[in-house]
Length: 111
Length: 113
Image: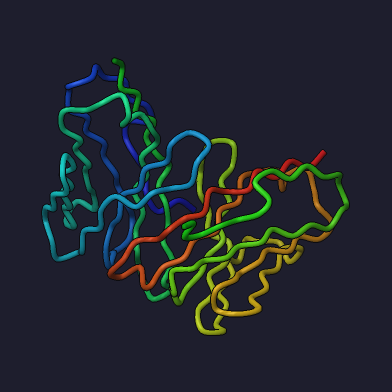
């Protein structure tokens, strides 16, 4: 079963606007990660946030984590057409050393 | 330099055939994985392999078997292919998902006809 559910499933914005994607999960986690997948390509790791962290930044990316609500959000500021991709959250839970991926958000940034 | 490479990129085959997908990583990572992505983009873990310890997702049919000749390779063998096996298969590696993310290959699109 999917550990993470992402919201919205699809998001379309204009270049320069901010994009926010949300991820909810079900069990306690060690960390949560976000990945980007361009069409027809493999996934690319964007950022990892540990369960004891609340916020993390990387360039135009800002990730928050609320373990009490079992949710995370990814904010992309000043979006560009090149940010068009699917974005997935993934959780590391338990001892199996495996990531469980969410259902993904398809982001389209219009020029 | 390709970090995680998969071959072939596309694979079209008939039902009932046996096929293999190769995966190699040159990152020195200690754990490798196989994921299946369906037509709705859901990613499902199939296997993880670390230091000769294999973890199999219980929903994976035993027609699927990973083989690791060495630490840098984790190949996927599929016997008696079925229509429902059509998907994109991704290999990935990690030095430890507690600290680092995964590095993914570019995927193998398998089509069973």
